[in-house]
Amino acid sequence: MAGILVVAEVIGGELSPTSLELLGAARKLSSEGAGSVTAFVAGEDHAQALISGGADAVVAGTAAFTSYDTYLPAVDAAIEQSGADIVLVGQSSLGRDLGPAIAFRHKVAVSMDTNAMGIDNGRLRATRSAYGGNARAEHTFQGDLQVVTVKGKQFDALEPDSSRTGSVTTTDAIGETSISIVSTDKAESEGIKLEDADAIVSGGRGLGDAAGFAGLEELAALLGGAVGASRAACDLGWYPPSQQVGLTGKTVTPNLYIAVAISGASQHMAGMTGAKNIVAINKDEDANMVRVSRFAVIEDYKNVVPALVEEIQKLL
Amino acid sequence: MKIIVCVKQIPDPETPAASFRVDEAAKKVVPAQGIAPVVNPYDPQATEAALRLKEAAGEGSVTVVSLGEESARDAIKHALAMGADEGVLVTGPEFDGIDNFQTAVALAKTIEKLEGADLVLMGRASADWDMGVVPSGVAQIMGVPFVSVAKSIDNNGGILRVERVLDDGFQTVDVPTPAVVSISNEFGEPRYPQLRQIMLAAKKTVQVWGADDIGIAGSESGEANRWFPLEALYVPTVESNVEIIEGDSPEEKARNLALKLRDAKLV
Ligand SMILES: Cc1cc2nc3c(=O)[nH]c(=O)nc-3n(C[C@H](O)[C@H](O)[C@H](O)COP(=O)(O)OP(=O)(O)OC[C@H]3O[C@@H](n4cnc5c(N)ncnc54)[C@H](O)[C@@H]3O)c2cc1C
Ligand SMILES: Nc1ncnc2c1ncn2[C@@H]1O[C@H](COP(=O)(O)O)[C@@H](O)[C@H]1O
Image 1 (spheres, rainbow over the protein chains, first blue to last red):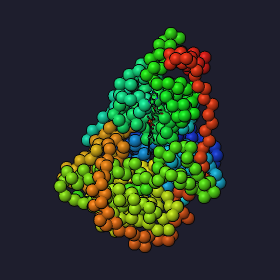
Image 2 (image 1 turned 90 degrees about the vertical axis):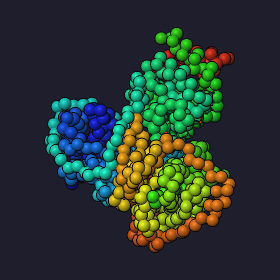
Image 3 (image 1 turned 30 degrees about the vertical axis):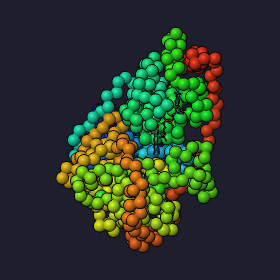
């Protein structure tokens, strides 16, 4: 029996947006012949939201899960109950650990950070970027189970349909763990989250120092957006890693992305090429970021950012 | 504490897009001219983590393992020059074209042949395939706990306190040894080998093992037995339609940009 299992995630009491995007992707695979869509979720609170979002059935884990390894037997129970041969997991902090753990338990591969999926002769074909975004690779899978992780914003969620119905079952399975969580500290994110922002102003190594971010914050505030950073800027300690955009940071898809003093390395681009309009402010006309942008200003950012703030203020 | 660090040699991930080429028929990256392969950037940080733990304890050993072509010896030498004690190079035609999953199996077998370790340290991902699965796989096969994306590790008498980087903050966990931990860039700069250490490293032993030595069977090895068959590899095309904003001064350019953004309804 074929089918798709979506491993949904609850973050801060809410179903993660990625979970609903995974359901959207799963419905599409289902329409290509991959079978019915089951969602696994911790707790029973969100079952109806998952069904409205596209699940045909929900398996709710009722145990008190802690570290990722505690979820594994419950996910296995959901795989068994649903008969799924495709497992979709969000590439979150949790999913990044869960995906490979599920795969190796079943001695099968997992396609990490997958960009596109399709069904070909009844089997999954996954497209992902490799070599820091310089290459695209298309893969098939050996074995009974095809496991995939997907970052946020890669697929569209469906319009929730509360008239949809589906079965809800539970599992009390939980894995033993020797990992004990001592503390979890959320980075205090003032204002809009990067992933949700419609406008993002990001800064890179070319800012020269942490103080360079002040002007970017002002510009972002004016646009009602958020501030991002390149890894170079984060590694220098100028901005917190939670604001890093790119392969190892956040994937963002704002309407407007203003890249200030960022060269446009493939690993940075991997997180923001989904932006609809890119603006580059860079000293170097040949910078890759300039090449991919819609508008570019070739100048020292120090002379442009304050003037841009002023000019936009006048227009508003 | 006995620590094993796994390091991988990869094409330089900072290779500019313009020099990056793929042989689509062979489904392989063509080495860029004049750009030497490097140690996967997270792996020296894993070595650094191992050395700091050894130094803090005042005892213990650090063994470096790399699976790859003969040239991967350079990645091992780099770790030895940083201060690791000895190296193992796993190499041979059986490993040509293998995937990350087969790599995990081979590394786990190598670690088994080394009679295990209290701690196996790896990078969070290798910057060629950008998968980040080998550490999880090695832990699973060894049957020990795995903690990912560490920014610091301390050993409190066999219980490791690991600070991890999350999407939206940090997490501190305790995990008993033996364990596998993967290290992230937030760990900080690894030490730079000094000339004297590079010379000393030349005297350290690097054992070379093949598939037979670690017990990898023919039915598991090579491209034909990938768990994750590669069907196509290509360079995505990006077209450039950039409009360079003109102006006689930075201020005028800023004004012209503001107007363009307004006309495009972006502000
Ligand atoms: C495995 C791996 C994962 C990675 N993941 C990420 C990731 O998630 N995100 C990420 O961002 N990077 C990532 N990187 C790093 C990436 O390869 C680049 O090194 C990094 O993005 C460069 O940051 P940058 O553009 O800020 O700095 P640089 O490349 O140094 O660019 C600085 C830019 O600023 C411009 N500039 C300098 N001064 C000024 C000025 N006064 N005014 C205007 N412009 C100026 C320069 O022309 C240049 O274009 C990763 C690398 C690896 C190997
Ligand atoms: N061929 C290899 N030899 C040694 N270590 C490896 C190899 N491949 C992966 N690793 C280790 O596993 C980590 C994650 O790799 P990956 O899962 O391939 O992204 C790397 O940072 C290395 O520490």
